[in-house]
View (tube, rainbow over the protein chains, first blue to last red):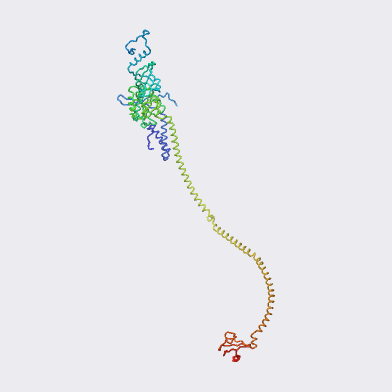
Length: 88
Length: 491
């Protein structure tokens, strides 16, 4: 587990990829017991974080606007209307 | 109507019967009028086209617009030089002139050449451009870049005023709200639309951080509406965009050149939005699966490790147990030895050996006595049997003795009688008797001599008489002379 970037700073994809890597190395069975327990702990944390991100995910939408002086600015925009969403 | 006043004269109303024309004259007049028309170019829709006539090779069909229709002929030679096949519904531009077929009076437009017009022309141009770009390799599968299965940041280049942008937003919010959307507005149809879209693509690609992909989308529309996306410059911009481009233009059957050169073509804007990220339900399922795999892998590792420890413990115990029980067996064996178990063991063993030896000895003596006794037992009988035979011999001997005595007496009696007779004879013949009668026996050195010539003078001479002997030496030897004999005797 060379990579110990704080989970909060990772994108969903990065965290998801690291989780997959950890699981693969655990499944390969090549790890020392200590390493595998470390991996397990990290895996559980990643899993928790990923799950909470999925649960709390809110669409982030912005619009690229060009100012008069030509600079580009990202202007936050309203997410999609969810009145038609299927509430689960 | 004045355009049709080609003869320059006002139509004359037929006055009376003498001014009437024959049909041939009238048709001839019309035909001439049609021939006087210059070469015309007519746009119309092909209808009733059934291909070249099987026998003649000429094509007979109609062209029409909303209000009118006219027969149309394309001679075989003209059709052979065509650049596309005519089909019903095609918008085609025919160049030629009218002709009137006098036997039937039917008027036809005879096309000397024809080209596609309107949408047909556009489609042909689009197909040519597509072929050109294909030849350049812009549509090669190898050029197409992979789109990440899960795009985190996606730019959408489309009109910000239409329903399409909302469709994309809604689709992605429902499917996967984790995808960040950046909307870049551009005109999608009409004048200047390709340029705006090209600029939109460039702006989207220049975003920092760069998006994982760009969605170039537009809702459904007419062929002309979608022509923007057949623009060559836009197509080249899509192909050369540094960020992978996903297109979703129009509806399912529509395919623009941008679709052909993009990295992924989806049939609609919604499908394009769906293709850039996995559904959140799938992600949840994936997380569940990963959770199970994580737990399974870890617990199997722990189980494996503890199993390994257990096996080591078992082996250790087994090895120690085996060793100890081996030692125990050796010790037990030693402890069970008699010499250790009882102090009298050695004496006992010796005693037992002696007793056994004594037994053996006694038994041996007994056996030998028995053997001798057995041997002696037969002896008296055998002896008796042997002596019994001796009695018989004794008896035989006695008999023989008697017989011998008897026989011997007989033999000796006869012999005795024979011997008496013989003795008497012998006595009668005895020289001694002769000697008694006066005869003597002369002996030389060699015994009795019966010849005088056995002697020589000087020899010793012995003469036996009945009562004794005389000895002397021979003096002379003579033949038969008794005198001599007397002499000798005297001497």
